[in-house]
Length: 350
Image 1 (cartoon, rainbow, N blue to C red):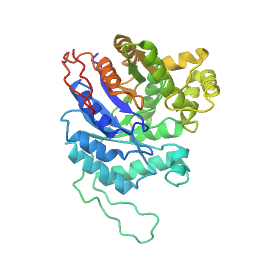
Image 2: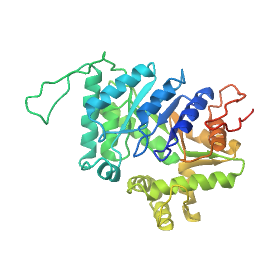
Image 3: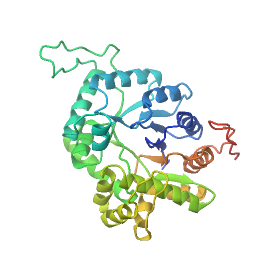
Image 4: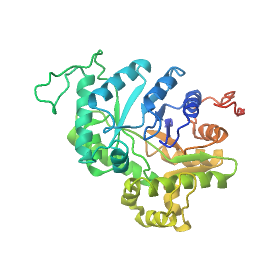
């Protein structure tokens, strides 16, 4: 089996130059996809454009846009435009985000998120296919079509975790991009989702599953572990309970409770995973030397169609470079890298 690999980042990564240079390097190393996040920091869409203008092959995804932050019309315009800019390499990633972000940043009630996801995906697909909009709030409004040529081929991937949103993914999406899925749970969850898809959308191809671990490679394995630990602990303690609930439901409730208790003041840079909770870290992360990371990722190749590594925020460029090299598809030609990074970082020669 040929390993398929992708790269994703967290919304806390706000160094635009680093994101772009990481994508350029990922293409050189043979990665298939690069997902640009969006939360409460950078607007991801111009960054996707910048990457598209500096690459030719790698697939670029919004990973993910909130269904609360833009109207369906705006999302359809964005997807159709980026489809052009990326020369057909764009994937529209959508998700329901979190209650804290939707209400605290977008000032929008977080009500019936699965229904919102279904409605937005349906409307965006219709607009991309050339259908008129579906005005509902303004009586008598004249429905308009997207002022571009139809692009129904734009893939839509959904970042869904709960039972209701994953049902929407099974019925309507082209791909599934869940975050923080335990390695040993992912394959079973994906199989169940595709079984549900056979019932809800029997004429559609199986979902592409793009997921993977928090990943850090360093010549000092303790350094790599500490960085992965901080990122995992942050997600499990500071995201409004979304990921804590998800990972607990995957069979790690005791370990998650221990991590929450050990991090009363969560920080994205510093975090603790108690020894008793170490099994959950090893399910959510790949870390160590380059060889150790490569070996750990081989187990993920059986669980996901595209193993998408998650780079923790704030990594120095040498660690980003080392991690991308270690996690790259094993079938790639062995490159000699002369890439200097966003700030003239030393190249990694191989």
